[in-house]
Every structure is written in C-alpha cells, then in structure tokens.
Amino acid sequence: MPDFHRLNKSRTTEMNSEELKQKLREEAARSQKNAQRKKPNAQQSRKQQRISEQTKKQLPPQSPVRRQREEERRRQEKQALKERRRRKKRGSYVIYYIMLAVIAVIIFTILSLTVLFNADKITIEGESDYSDEQIIEASGLHGNENLVRLNTSGIPQKILDKLVTLDSVKVDKVFPSTIKITVVRSVPMASFLYNGRNYVISHIGRVMKIDDNDSTECMHVIGYTPAESVIVGGFITAEDPEQDRLISEISAGIEKAALKDITTVDITDNIGIVLTYQDRIQISIGSVIDLDQKLKIATELIYGGYIDENERVTLDISDKSKAIQRPITNAPVTTATPETTPESYETDENGDPVISGDINSDTTAAPAA
Image (cartoon, rainbow, N blue to C red; front, side, top):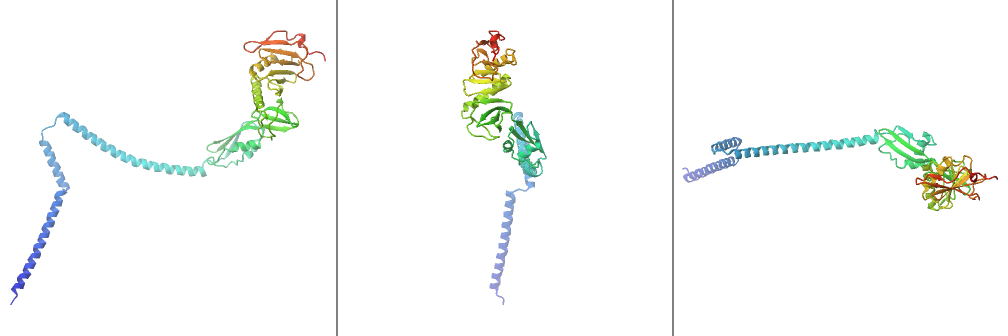
C-alpha cells in the first residue's frame, strides 16, 4: 500500500516551492514597476510635458507686462547659454593657438641659431688710418658668425687696443646677414714733452704716439706733468687733475673761437696762462674765467686787421674789459715786457674791441734790434 502520509508531505513541499517561486516573480515585477515609475521613459516625459502644456493653456491668460518679462527672461537665458557655449569653444581654441605658437617659437629659435642670420658680410664705415682688412683682423671676426649668438660688447675694445689712432669703435648687427663696424679717427689735440720724449694725445686723452720729435701740427703744452708713465693707445692723466681740465677747456675755447694756428699753451701757472699764435703773437689770458670772451677779443684783434701779418706783439687780455698790445723784438717770443708805452683796447658790451689809440702808431712797431 502506498504511504499516503509520505505522499501528502511531498505534495505539500512541492506546492510550497511553487508558491515561493510565484512570490519571487511577483516581487521582481513589483520592483521593476516601481523603478519605471521613478524613472519615466521619454514617451512618458513627452506625455507629462504635453499634459503640463495643456494645463498651462487652461490657466487664465497672463498680463502683457508679465508675458513680456517672461519672454525677456527666456531670451536672456538662451543668450547666456549660447555665450557659455561660445566661451567654452573659444577657450579650447586659445589652448590650441598657444600650443601652435610655442611650437613655432621653438622651431624659429632653432633655425635662428643654426641656419638663419649667419653673417656673410662685414662693412666698415668712418675714416681712419687703417684699411678695412686691418680693422676686421683686429676685431677677430671671420664673417661667418651667427648674428643671434654673436656678442659684440667686447669687440670695440679689442679693436681700440690694437689700432691706437682710433678714438671710438661701434659694432652693430644688421639683420639678416651683415656686421657693421663704425670707426672714428683720433684727432691730435695737444702734445707735451716728458722725460725727453714727445707725447701726442687726442681729444679724449688717448696717447696717439710717442716720439723724439714734435712733428705733429697741434698745440704744444708747456708745464704738463703726467701722473704715471703711459704707452701708445693708453689714456693719460696729469698729476694735478686741474691741468687736464685746463687743457680740455682751452682746446674747446680755441675751437669755438675759430682761433687757428695756436702753437704753444703754457699752463705752468693756472692763473697766468699764455698762448702763442704762429710763434709771433703772445696772448696772456690769465685764468680760464671768461675764456670765451677773452678768446673772442684775441680773434678780433688778430683777424680784424689790427695786427699786421708779420708783426710780433704781445696781447694782454687777462682783463676782458681791455686789451693791451705791446711790441716785441724780432727775437723769439718771451714774457719780457718792453719799455714802450702800451696802448689799451677797451671792449663794448658784446666783447668786441674798442680801439682807444692808433694801432698803427710808432709805439706798435718793432724797435730796431
């Protein structure tokens, strides 16, 4: 006989399993439905939007002012959104442009230092006592230098050290492929005797040459003592700095007054300075106070016909209010004062001489030896 008790127990267990599976399926369907309810699909969203629009239509009409404000607000929001998108897009372009610029700069720099801007010509401008080849050789340039990498700061001094009759040198880069050297020739300003040798200096105080003979056509300075021994091409200074100042001021004053052919300048006494013109006219100017006006008086007397071309006289213009002329002998110019009565030349307010006596009188003639 079948065991009815066991059969009933087995059926009960099977039924319970089916109920459990059914219950699980129901719970899964319920959870899926809840998820769909929480996250509506696109169709449901459009449906809800359509319902909301219908609801809006059923609402009472808005006032014109409120409608205008709403439209203005929507337009501003739309414009702001468009501006944000444009700014974002432009920002991405800026980064792109910056990257391109950096790459271009790197490439240009590499080419500039290697291939581009290589010098193929050196030009020389200005007057000098040297040939172009000598100046280029002194500079140390070869004509194949890269202009970007070339440092020109030390080249002028190299040229000045080797070429002593130059006062200044300037080196310029002329892109894309030229180096320009501009030179200025030294002009003799004065010479002086020291330790038995004659030193010739330029307007900037540079020693142009040292020799045993004074063959340079420039004023010879008496009473100048250098501070130390110098070499050709070096710069010179006096033991007394006042002497350097005197020479500079006297040279500039002579050039300004156009008083040519000054042969000697005696600065032994800085308040009794004496100039000599053509070795025949001795000009006592005293100190350098009112130097321009004193030299103007001397120029007027010498070039104005008051002194003959071969006449040997002394002019005392240490007092700018008058000029005293004294005749001297045919002997070399000395500081000795003859006993002849001097004549005075007063000056007007412009510094021009006013003759108080006859310059051609016997007192101005050279006495017989």
